[in-house]
Image (tube, rainbow, N blue to C red; front, side, top):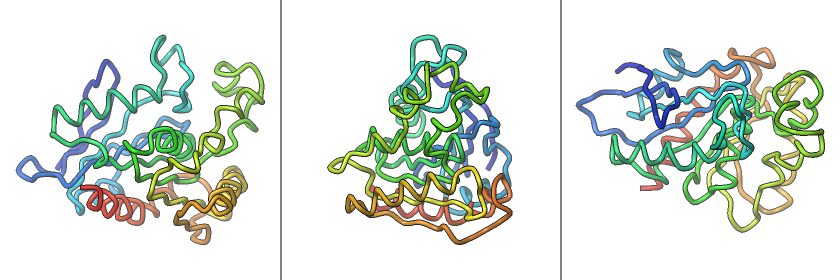
Length: 240
């Protein structure tokens, strides 16, 4: 089992293969946060992927926020969301003969809301999603010097592109897991807002808003690796 970096439609993607002699059980697509750190060579996630015989894909998206808005330094024509929904499944089908819905989606922070963006807009392709410390209300970060200032003309324009506004009551991912450390000062309020909307809409989801590992950062994300990958492994198995 090993990690490598390849090119998928001209974009760098870190790839984990649990064993060349094994038929993989499915694929986990992991979206990184604003820090740009993927799960390549991450022992916590690598061990869990190997344990469940899952391929791991972790594309590099810079500071794109994984939305349907074109981020020129990432790609001048194709939005990050279009890339994920079209080019990644095609690559998986060609290389491993694995297609949706056997691709589970997860991500952390910026990537956590990106995973929800993808699953909410393409629920049939990606019916299983895990969001780790997702920045649900990213419009609150507009005007603070992030790439959101380039992507959107104002905070309201950013809010209109948030995942929570693209949740459809009749077309949603059937398996959702929301994770956030209650001591996280940046993401906890937003994920509670999403959970409230899901509950009021009657959409089933699972959550863990109790487990704590220092609040925010990779200590928490790594501690959640067994729960994340086990959830997606079971979801992918059911999707066959």
